[in-house]
Each structure stands twice: as structure tokens, then as C-alpha cells.
Length: 608
Image (cartoon, rainbow, N blue to C red; front, side):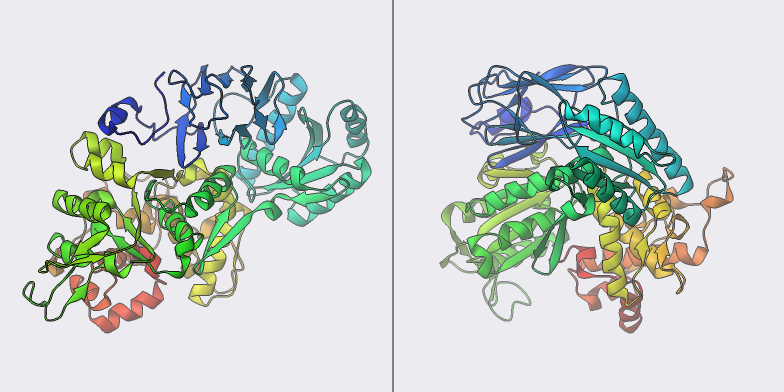
């Protein structure tokens, strides 16, 4: 199997052809973080992967503490097994030394020197190794399916206890079992109790009682708010148990990390994102260019904000530019500035964004959209550390850190001749890959409540929580638009919910196929006359609907479409409301009124 690590090397085109294509539909994967690189590796359905420094390893690591063939991950019909291959410095799993071989589950962190490998599994074989464990996992899966169908909750209480002590603890759990509960061994270091119908407060109380009775550390996770599939719920409960003190219980919600960055909050719940932001913290201290890759809506701009806010450049400016939104004829003047009289309408000299960002960070979102000529000029500026305004010969020194981002695979763009290899080599000193929301199930469960609270505050509505039925429905969706689509879905639900609603239910959510993000995928606006009817994808079908549940009030459909077109117009107009209103042939006063009505925020159209 070819090496899976994207590494910056001089022979970039050779490296491009050596990297296997990503499987966009893969749900079972590994997130690898090694030094200044982060990437994902799809899990094979059988066989295994070898980790090490050797070029023949399946996953090549650069960390000098990794052996040439350091560890093997084996996929069996029943579990994932990590084996240390007699490495010099050893392997850790969740901070504990690995002796021989050990089974791992979703959320486990494998440490090889300074490199980290996080397991993420949502499908595939059962994770249990014994009949007892298989039964517990099966009961958990059954209870989750039942709760999902009924819009109810299920608690998983993980007890951190190992070795011979498990035997006596199992007897205690059996003696103290309440109606409907099932208990057993979760893994070598944990027992667990599956408790249907317990909400967060009842589950916390039950966990505290068991912690006191067993004199053990206990972690409590409640589905669907801490996860909606067995692997995610188990990982959440185990993570809470790992942080709990002996004799005490800790909720999974209390393990969530929150970062505040220039007024924006990054909520880190999923192990993959916790490790990713640990990498971001390290990269922030090293003044090198960074390329961020991820699907649309995954939070690339938040990663860029963190790179700036946590760096020595934090006191300087951070300027963000959406390269896809700059008209080609204005791109040069926008980036590099212009002298007075450089072109028609240039009545005064103006510095470009590269100059304006000097001393700080320039974030170039959708950098793959720059023309070949602009790529060449940007490369010269980065190499020389100076910029020349359009219409001037004077070189002006600049000191700027450039962070680029794209939803496209830039290596593939290089291979296709759409992006300069030398520019990618100059920018891609470090690479950060942001996983899609569907690969971050713990984040999905937690972000719903966080985004709903923020939307209520923006709209001036009384706080609404996300109820169990709504959380289950959110978990069932695939989220091609990622966090942005999730935010828009919750905003639409809150905007249209009756005034007396305090808890969002599944019935309050807009249908997945008619969410604002889906409407936003309509063709881009080119001129005021280009306001078009919905595409054929949304046109009435000659096939009769299977049920009335596919319909919703036409006013809601039109409002979603209008909001999406306003967002698209603002994106094209770089946030200038007058121009956006002109593109839609809408009076500016009407545009401003609807801007408030639909709670359209700058981040919706990609503003910094």
C-alpha cells in the first residue's frame, strides 16, 4: 500500500501521484497528526496498516522517535487490534503503555512518539471481543435504536475499573440494578451500565451513586446529546471517566473544550478536533505558511483565526479574503494595491490587502480560485517579501504570514494543471486537514445546542434548547454543508418556531432536502437580471410524493430560497449591501429589513 502521508517535498508532482485519492464517503477513518501535518487515512475493511518511518510503511511518520516499523493496526471481523512491533520507544494508547496487542475503539488515541492517531468508526464490525462484551454492545445499540425511534434518551455510565476488581464490581452493579438497566464489561479497563430513559440530571445522579458505591471513577454520557451511535457514546463516557476522580462521577458534557477566538467560539468535543487544535496551537508559534484543507462549511476560517490569535502576530491585523468572490479584473488591485490613476476610477492611491496585513496574518480562502497570473505574482511576493502596487515601480517591504484554504485538493489541482506546484510548495510548509462534520459525530451532538443558543441570542428570541427528538433527527442527516448547514438549519427552525416553544422538536426542523444550504447551491448571481427560478432539481416532479410529510408551507420554501439568494448576493458583493440589493433588483430598504428578519450574519457569506 502506498504511503498515505502528504509530505512537502521538492518533487511535488511526484508526491501528488504517490498519494492515494481520498474516499469522500468513508466513515471509518484515522486522523493522523504528526509534527506540522494532519491528514486522514481510510480504514481498510480487512488486513491492516503499518505505522513507521520507513517509506514502505502504510502510514509514514516523520517523528524521529518512531521506529521504521513501529506498530500495526489489524482489522479483524470483530475488532481493531493495535500491536507494537518491538519499537524502541514504545506505543501509548490513551496515555497508557501498550504491552503486546490491544483492541481499540472509536475515540481512542494511539501515540507513536510525538505523532497521534485517532480512531473514528461509525460503521463496520462490532467492537467487542467476548460474548459478555458483545451482549453489552448489542443492548446499547438496541436501546439507541429504540430511543431514536421514540425521541427518547439513553444513558451510558462507564466505570473506570480494571483487573480482578471488575469481578466484585460486577456483582455490586447486579445487586444495585434498576428496572431496565443492563450492565457488564465494556473493555479491559471499564464496566458499564446501559440505562434507558434517563435524562442528563437523572443520569448524573445515578452515576454519582454508583461512583460512591464502587469507590471508582465514573463517566456519564447521554444519547443523543453526547452522541447518537454506540461508538461515539462509548467514547464520550470513557473520556469522562478518564477525567473523573475516584469516588466521583463526571458528565461527558463537562469534558468539552471551548476556545474563544476574536469573539467566536470553537467548541471541541470530538477527539479528532481536540487533537487537530492541539496541532494548531503548535503551528501558531511557528511563523510558517499553512494550507488548510476541508469541505465547505467545516470551519476552515475558524482554524485560520486560531492560527492568528494564538500566534505572536495576534496583536497585528488579520485580514481574510475570499478569492472566489473577487472579480478577476479587480483581484490584482485588491491584493497588491494600486497607484493613483493606475486604471479608470483609481482617483487615489490605495494599499492592497497584502500591505494592510503586514505585521499580521492574511487568510486567503478558496485560494485555488486565483488565476494563474495571480498565483505567479503572489509567489513572487511571498519569495521576495515585498509588494509593488499596480501602476508603481516602488517595492514596499511587507511582513505577513499567509494562510491559504481550499475545499479542493490542491495536490490534485497541481496534477491537473490548475494550481502552481511551486506556489503550493511555498504555501504548504504545514498542512491542516479539517474533517467533515459527518466524521465528527461527537461535535455534531454538541454543536446543535451551542448553535441554537447563539441563534436565539442573535434573533432576540427567548432561549430554546434542542430536544431529544430534534437531536436524533440532526444525527440522522448527512450534512453535506457541514457546520454551516447545521447552523442554517437551526436558524430556520428557531425563526419559524411558535413563540411558546422552549424546546425544539424534530417537527420544528426544516426538511433536509429544502434546507437553506441546499437552496444556496443554486447557480451564482452574475448580474441584476440573473435572478432565476429554482433549478430543475427543485422543480415539481411528475412522480407523486410518497407521503404528505414531504411538503411544508410554500411561504417557508420561498423564505428559505430568498434568504439563500440574499446570502449569495452578499458573497458576490463582498458584503456591500447596496450592491447586493442591486444584484437582486431589490430596494435597499427592503433588503435591510429582510437582512434582520432572516438573521443573516457576516459569517454566512464568508466575511471574517
